[in-house]
Image 1 (cartoon, protein in one colour):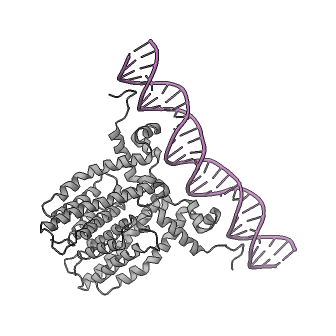
Image 2 (spheres, helix red, strand yellow):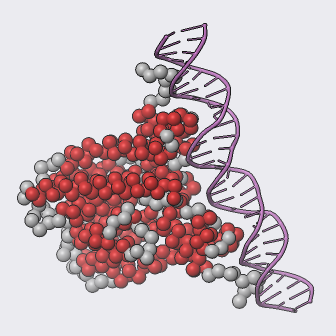
Image 3 (cartoon, helix red, strand yellow):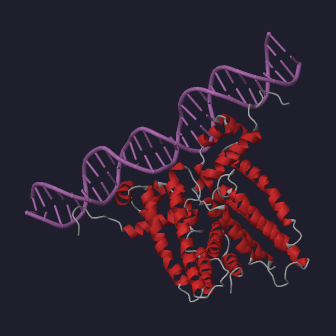
Length: 195
Length: 195
DNA sequence: CGTGTTTTATAGTAACCGCTACATATGTAT
DNA sequence: ATACATATGTAGCGGTTACTATAAAACACG
């Protein structure tokens, strides 16, 4: 144990509460007061543990991605490209419709626009979204090498399309779309995919 | 001419400036100071003409939709459902990539999340997005009646899918996706559509 | 010209924003 | 016990927010 007075709250639990606030209100819409109330701590504790609002957001974002990493890993490890995309789209639909979580996707609605003070967060989210496209593309490239996708298919275009469908589902989920609505989007999108 | 001192600014021109600010920063991220500076007026003129920030946003939103109505009308009036969707997706890709405008789509990034004070705006945008899905669905229903779409196709699912692709392109455009990126998404999405 | 009506610019308002100084509490090390 | 190090709660910092009170300016009327 380290020296000094021990921390009276659990960091991961506090991060989960902060994540929920950011997920619901976005980076800009979440106030320090919102966050400290949800986390059950006072501002000095927040700043001592996470630096500032942006640092807290990044930590919460890491936790968000970690919670979704399993779905992506399992989906993309499916034997065929089609199955991988199918699992990814249907899993995302299910996740977005999960009523235990706030509506929508933090990676999309965390900071899609905003004032100058959240420019860095906006760029960070955009970069992470691009990284997720890379993950899909690399899986599809492998599929093409393995003869699992036609020779004339374009993994980059397909990957960006799949990501667009995911982002579109996230927007509709934020607006209140039902689980069935999202599942239908996923199913329809799969028709664009080489069987 | 009406009685009293005449207004010293053009309302529509001021709305265009306000639209650009909201489009770039979103409802929450746009400050009255940002808006008045861009519009070339002082706060009292803004409040006298538009009520409050939300009223100004709604007027700017009307103007935004009016500017895009032509594209939608022309696209959806195409002879076949496939052509209609093709024009809609490709036209949207082109519009989102137009560098004369801010990145992305106001209907999506205007207020996808935010604090309590923009709950009404968030709901308004979600409702307008749903209304645009209705427009597509009605066109596809007609197509099905006319035998232009297969008997076993589902206009509601297809419409929601097309909208999701549009929303997804908007998210990617907000993140800096190129014109070609967006066009490839549109082209790929069309493969999901009954020829 | 004077009167009435509306818009304008100045200069604020109270409330909230992210963030922190400070004193106190609570632990370890000696 | 004493000293040290870190966390905590209170209370409030300067700055920004959306919005407005006020008075002067600019028009149409009689």
